[in-house]
Image (cartoon, rainbow over all chains, first blue to last red; front, side):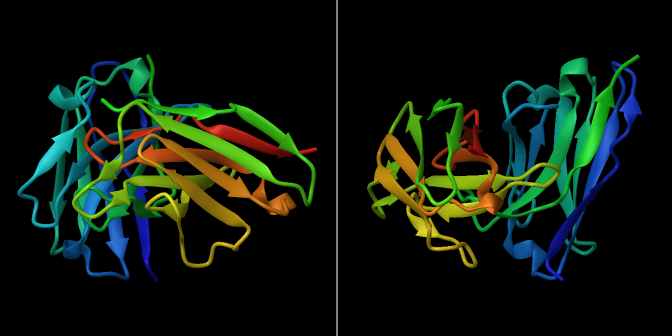
Length: 119
Length: 113
């Protein structure tokens, strides 16, 4: 089955770190650019980061880029998002999403993993 | 950053009628090299991830009913849903993938009257 499954979300204190994971299956993972998109409670969508197929190129939203690292392991068909210095405003549902290229829409989304930053 | 502005924020339409959602971008999304508009529309139902319904401004995705259509070019785009069905209740987002950082409209909540 073609799918993306996120994990790693948690309740974490401000200033903490978290690594989100996204497991891909059912397609040739290395052919696709992968993205993270987040959605704060009751709010809209915000693109966070993307990585190309061979992990040679990454790009981040300005508001978060000093605190994020996106990576991937094509042998395990996984993409990761390392988040440091978490703030309450980072509380959101984090989706991973697939695109066919650098500037491409997202034709496959996971169901998301919840990150809650609170003391 | 490209700013995407949708209108209206919410919309109430009767079953069988037409729903129209607009999206305006702060700069052109038309790439002259290939004459494509880098604009997608997503449908998000409660508790679900977004699902792409229209890509390249007017290309309906596989499995999407033909009552969904997209139009527009450069900075002004429209999603039209004809013959509205109960299952179309959702929040709809436009999305520019012309250039990073990729940005979304604020969303339009579509409800049935």
